[in-house]
Each structure stands twice: as C-alpha cells, then as structure tokens.
Image 1 (cartoon, helix red, strand yellow):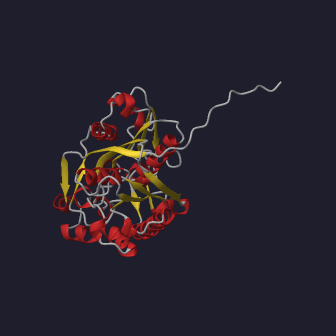
Image 2: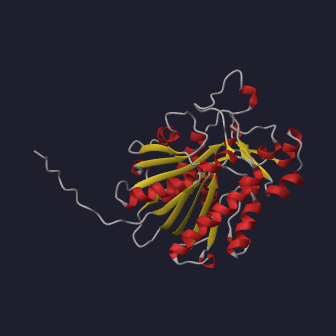
Image 3: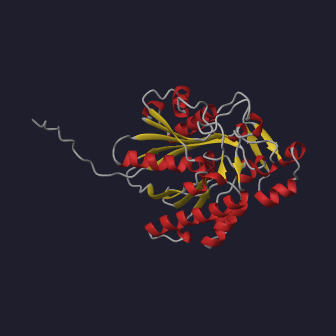
Length: 338
C-alpha cells in the first residue's frame, strides 16, 4: 500500500539582500621593492603590467580560516545580528586549512556559530560570487534565513616565489557578507554563472590531488604551486566577464550607465580597463583596490565590496554589478540593488 506523504505547504519565493559586509587583510605588506630583491623584476615592470603596488601576506601560523573568521566577525557586527542567527556558512576558497573538514567548519568553531551548517565552495576566484548565489537560492526558497558567505585565500602558501610571472600578482585576505531577506528591497536581482573545463590548464595547481600526489620524487618540480598561462588567462578573463556582465544587464533591462558601481575581480588593471572600454563607462565607475591588495582570489570581490560600502561608493537603492573570473575556468556576475 502506497503511503500518503504529509503535504508541505509552499511559500512564495523571496529576495535575498546583503545586509552586512566585512573584510580582513594581514598586517604584513609586501611591496614591489621587496619583490625586486626576491626575483628578477622591477617596480615599473609590475605596475605597468598589473597596476599592483603592494599586497598583504599572512603570517606563518595565520590560516585561511583565521582570516575568514575575522572578516565574518566584521560582517556580523556591520549587519547588526548575533552569531546565533547564522544558519548557514559558505566559504569560497582554494587554500583550505585542511582537505577536510571544510574551512567553513573551522570558521564555525572560531566564531561560535553553533546553529549553522557549513561547506566550502571551490570555484577559484569566482568562489565568493558562486557562494552568494547559492545563499540567494537557499533564502529565496525558505531553506535558510541568514547565510554567511565568505571568500578567503592564503595564496602566499601556493605561490612559487621564484616565478616572477605569478608571485608578483597574488596576496592574502578575506571578505564576508551576511545575506537575509529584507522587505522592500529587490536585493540580488539576477546572477549568471558559467564554467568551461576546456581551459582548466591555463590557471591551475597541477599537483597535490589524487591525480598527481606530491612525493619525494616530484616535490622539487613545484607541482603544488600555482601555474598560469598569462596571455590566455587575460584573454579568457575579459571575454568571460564581459559575456557574464552583458547577460545579467540584459536580463534586468539595464545599461552599464544605470550601474552606480561595478565591482570586478581584482586581478589586473588591464583587464578592468578593457572591461570599462567595452562597457563604455569611465574607469571611475569601477571600485579598484588591487593596487594595495593584489589578486586575493575568492576574497577579491568580497574585500572590494566591503571597502566600497564602507567608503560610501553607493547608497540604498543603487544598482551594483559584481563580476568575476577564476580558474576552472569559472566566471559569474550579479546585479543587485543595495
């Protein structure tokens, strides 16, 4: 006899808004002058090709979870909620403290979020925005009410400090956002996410997984460090971010000129300049902090969003465009009403 299931009442979808942000940067600053001593490079060479002046480097015993927890605490305070109200934690990262448990579980312990369920999102530099859309769906469907999304990476731990083409680009840090339904606000209006595994090898870390375990025989090959095809990465970054940006703008019926502030992935000033040119908006419409942070991977857009919010780059009711690109390749964009 077929058992009759209890009917679960349906609820109308609701919007999700970012109600608080936070970020954390390590104390140590690594300047271009410092790098001149470490590898064959120059301040002028780095600035002309990337726009980066300095980046932050985490301490030896300062892990991804530590930075993530500090950003989370700042976001919780900014949102005006208690840690007990958080019922889901998502951490976008490619530099987890441990393979398992997840960095999100470590963060839960560090901040005392005893009511939260936790998992990580591995989408490289797109991790934070992927996490925001996952949180958006949880909230829209009434699965969870208050979600903490964090982007955090300690890239200094996987950079080859003898490779001048990559070591000058990256830094460490964390950014966080609290998402919740907010009556009267459209919040996250639409998001587009995409991936193309055919470009997996243009930006990757080949060793350290089950395909290429790190052994005594191969450890000197630096297979457990970040490797990048710079020319192809630049090309795909511009192409994919422009595609993602145009898709969400078209869905909303907005033009680039309707956007108060564009918060792009902070990878390279040339990529951002190319986007500004193609969107036909001034560079001043973009919030840029890569000059002092470098590329912090999943943390980049989260840190920039927090910085832009705290410095008054936009007001309640303004439209924002967030757009990212990362290894995988992965990319994403969101239009939201602040």
